[in-house]
Every structure is written in structure tokens, then in C-alpha cells.
Length: 131
Image (cartoon, rainbow, N blue to C red; front, side, top):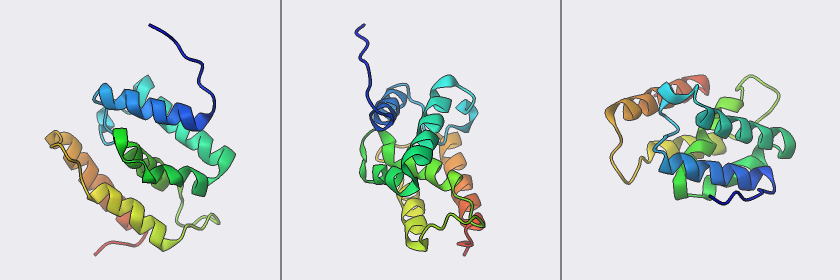
């Protein structure tokens, strides 16, 4: 197997999302959160936010392949504290939540779907978006 030297956290994040996709690890597979693969995606996302800023990281939201947009929404919303000085426009929070609500092309396992739905509810409660 050829190992490529990856330049930049952003590229590594995209490649990690791709690897997770093919390993069938979904952002809402919460039973896999302790795995090295899952933790790598979280760590890379948080590193990009710390180095480049949240708004720069959220540009990944436009990427639909390999669930990059879902990883971005998960990491971005988990990172934001609604009571913190880091202000995120309400519209952006809505867009992130809506991208997760939009669902998947393929059907997900019941546990993953339930995790996703519970996570959405938790985020809506955190950001005062509950109906």
C-alpha cells in the first residue's frame, strides 16, 4: 500500500471522512466514538477550528461526498457553546441542523438513525430551537 504525505489539516480531514465512509463509520455511530478512526475526525475538525476559525471550518458544509457535511455539522455544533462569546449566526446553526435533518440517500441502521434524531433534538434544545 502506498502512503502519501498529506499536506494540511483540511486535506487530511477530507481524506479521513472518505476513509470513515468506506469503513462504514457514520458520524452518528456513537457506539464507535472511542475508536481511533472516529477520534481522528473529531481531532482534525477541532484542530482546523482552532487554527483557522469556526467559519473557515464550516466551508466543509458545502461538501456532500463521504458525509463531510455531516461530520462538519456534528463537529461544528458540538464545538459551539450557545452561551459563549463565540457568536454564530442563527441562520448558520439552522443550516447545519437542516443538513443533518435532510437525511441520507441510503437507509441507515436503526441505531444510527435513532442516534441522529436524538442528537438533533439535543442540539435544538441547546440552541433554543425546540418546537
